Image (cartoon, rainbow, N blue to C red):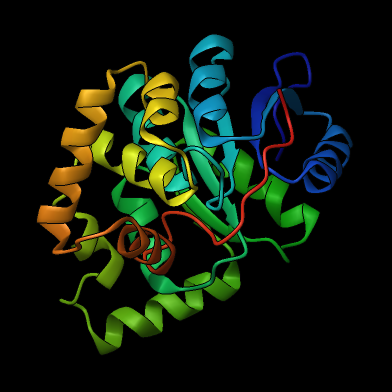
Length: 230
């Protein structure tokens, strides 16, 4: 059952690949009850544009530059709790799903999901329900049956890091110098240096290369990222 097209579900697409984002827009434009009102090519843009545009649903990739989709989800849920976040990712690891839902995501889809399932998921999370694509739901059920009391490794590793430390870590891993990190986050270089030292102490890492490896292994960033929208 769809909503009245006169009052469509508003959607923000957060995806750093232009071709994928354009494809998603075209698929959703075919749905009479769904309206794409904005796009974001970085996690930071996703947070800012959610606050500005107030979409009902944010369709969020995890592998986003400058601020990954998981941290962007946390910030969106804190700043705009009425917005529902639906993760659309290539990552099928249960640990990503565990962390995404712990940070407030209402659903999780794999990128090979059909357009019909995506539209259904948007409608369901807008209603206040949770939604997982069939493949992920089956894997999660099996995973929890086998180890119901074991949280995901990435979730445990990152639990001790603050939101600001996660932001600094990602920018460092993406090769940004302290001055650029400070400018991006609106803080002083001295504060960036303090966050860097705190990260190394908490994670038991002693150099930038180690921080970068950790960020990639923990899914905070990828080995290469792109920024494709202004």
